[in-house]
Length: 381
Length: 72
Picture 1 (tube, each protein chain N blue to C red):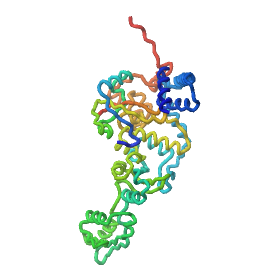
Picture 2: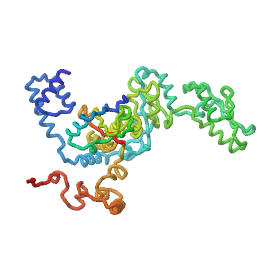
Picture 3: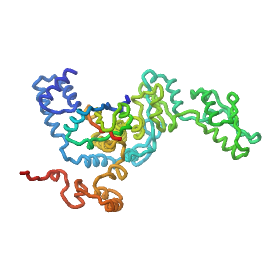
Picture 4: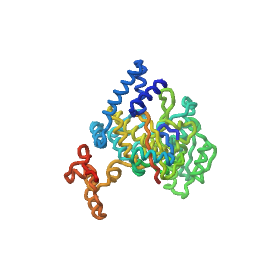
């Protein structure tokens, strides 16, 4: 195969064609399958070159408009329902139109953040290890490990008895729990697994508040992550979470630093950078369309993702992002908040150079696209 | 930064940068940007004004090389 690829690369170079890597691989594969001789390969490359050049986007083509229509049309057929149970039965993930809007709006707080946590090869079949990690990541509080709990109004204290089997079940560390309790409640009395607490002021209201506080004290879990679900996928264990904290999870031992992901694009940007955010936008948008049984060519989605990340940070499409930062006053005014833009432009004395499409439509000139994109200049003598 | 979503980033030398700009016939500011505090830019020690060469894995082209300008 490697030889064929090299041979094809040479032929392609000789024909002065500039093919992307995937074309060269495809041609090499075809050449091998049909056992092409040199002349036949020459002819194949020649024809592919012709077809490739014909299929290429012309300079000045309105790719943005085409992308907008190609994403927008299938979008009309998406479900309007917000919630769907997809993938993991117990976890709720926003899909369909609301999710797509969330992606292009670059929301800071998405409605259902979720992670898929994978493990390194040596741990991925180790159920015990995965369960321990899952309990470290998933949120649990004192209430989850209680055997007995009462509020004693006569002695004005709260008594909590911890259940050792529950602690073992959750693979938590007893001393760690005690430490956390001691840190949160300085005046707690600890006698093996029986904890008693006295309120700061001796009245019933304080006592009740204290009881709730004790019960809600978090004893394990990563910030921003709630429920976790452990699933066997193909031949490995995977943790799915409700809520997301990529930075903290990637630092944990045994977690696969290569495949573990989140659906929160801003978090990807923060932890893995702008290029990863671009990939996340493409992946999430395409997954949302696929899940609804709609196909959109990736190139359209790539264009959207490129625009959203061109600035170095994830920007939304629309009023506060790309459309709101257009250079032309008229183009901005025609989108949203017309009055605001016209007023501000007049105060600042902005100049519109009428180089875009929208501006020229507004003033009734030919648009700079297609025939309009070329002009006539007189030769300098 | 070995995550599957992170493509390879490499800092270009001055002469390479000029070659790239000349080949594409554009000004420096016309390139897409990357922040200097971007986790990947930081990890390879890119400074403001550098051009990063990014080798993306593309589902359509196989491999795609693009550039970003480091800004503050």
